[in-house]
Length: 88
Image (cartoon, rainbow, N blue to C red; front, side, top):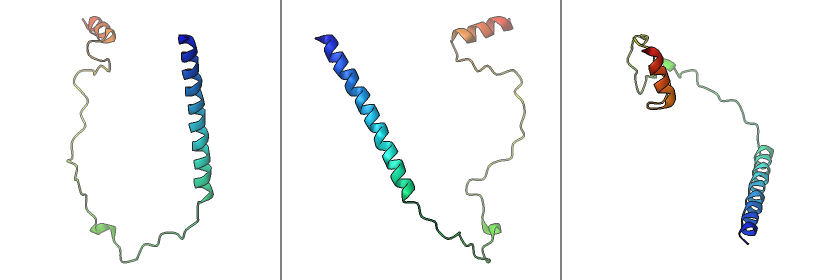
């Protein structure tokens, strides 16, 4: 009986996944069929980009390489321990 319930759940999940996939394909085709061409954007001649300014200005920093090599291993992992052991 338990195996039957597992089988029914598995088949139901497989059916729902395929049904969702089919629905998405229909929606994509529907959106693609409703596409309309529009006129190109017209920018007025009196509009100047010089009037724009950065909303969040970024500070100018010099890029300096790190003084010691940076390890990409997660802290406390076996890889980090192996890297630390090879440095000694």
